Image: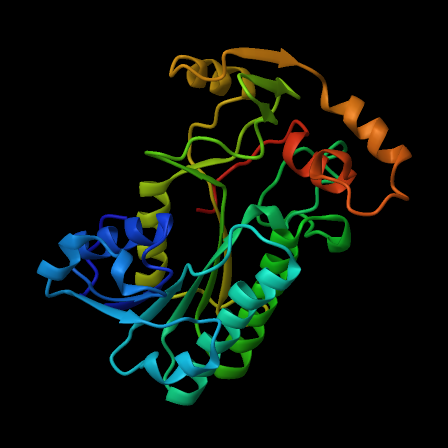
Length: 311
């Protein structure tokens, strides 16, 4: 991590988002110029206007009309952070998959080969095998039954496939950066903790780790992923890295720290296996919430551990 890297020009999509803004800041701190792709230029930080190293490009990646605006001339690497964090399959198809397809098309049209860094998610891993093997690393099984998971998981699986296909077809260096639960100022909650209801939170497990990733850690790692060549793998220069912090708390430690901020007021321990049993009896019902989908429940609530040795 100590060696110097030459200055680069990085295109960062989703640059106005939570991770995107931090990544722009990390890229500038590392001495790189940034082409910041945002859907609405009016929401970018005011400080960007005074920084000659940041060029703002307004483009809605879900619209194919955006492709000409994604000029790859002079771009050394693309950090693709644009995606929808919520919404149904239709919204995910519009924002996440279409946005990725249009970005890939812009790269193909340019006939250039910038390094591609995809901001993916550890949600792509299967939760059903966690009881037998509670360790989740880059070799863990991906979700084999995406229809039983939420739209976000399905979108991230498909988004990875789009990028892998593009990397092989266009001979790109590709890093799939599977982020844990990103936290930082104004964002502390995540789906691995348990459901909150008013002043209450249900603590569904006390073991295992919460796969946290501080937003600044994520940003610095994404920039580093853009800087470094990708080693040759069995499918070409494609590398998978789980982006997880070193010090991961269990749910008791996390919730106790949260409670010191004033919320939750009351922590109610209810073991997740009760929901698991209920979910197993209700598999025939469509449209169940995540707590009553066994794959989703186990992915978030089983006692899992997340080594980050490869990172």
